[in-house]
Image 1: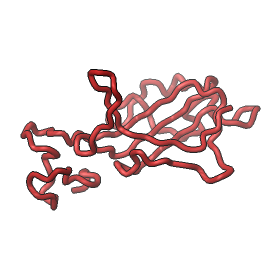
Image 2: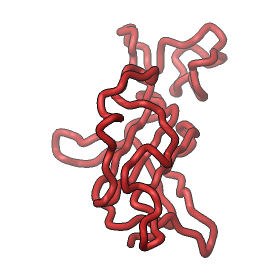
Image 3: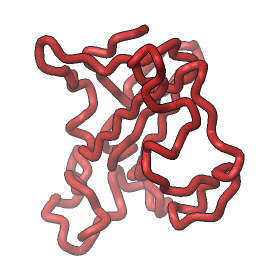
Image 4: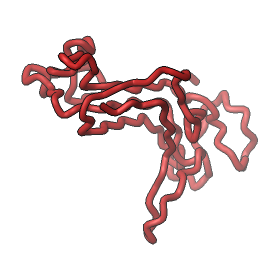
Length: 158
């Protein structure tokens, strides 16, 4: 049994030399992410594979967590075979330790697979203008040529 006491995430790219480099916030905006640990005994039921959905055309269907994974519930050993780490905070989550209170853990039996699903928004010249951090919504208060992206929070609602 593995006991997760906390975690930290960041957006990293691998350079041509193999170095791991943090991606600047003005190039990729982290809207939110989800992560799952799957234990060796957990299986996705056959009826859930390839079912249609409304989530960005991904081949998954939202179903209650108790039905999402066969063997993913509490087993005879009383420890779960799957754990979810769903974070809906954005860039402020990068390099920020998410720790559980003293005495608490998220246990998982025989962790086998880590599934990470970041929802990133391309803020590195998606319009090809050559302007760093553009395009910006009309409501942006960032001055022209700013050294930062004027999208400091989710651009979906602006």
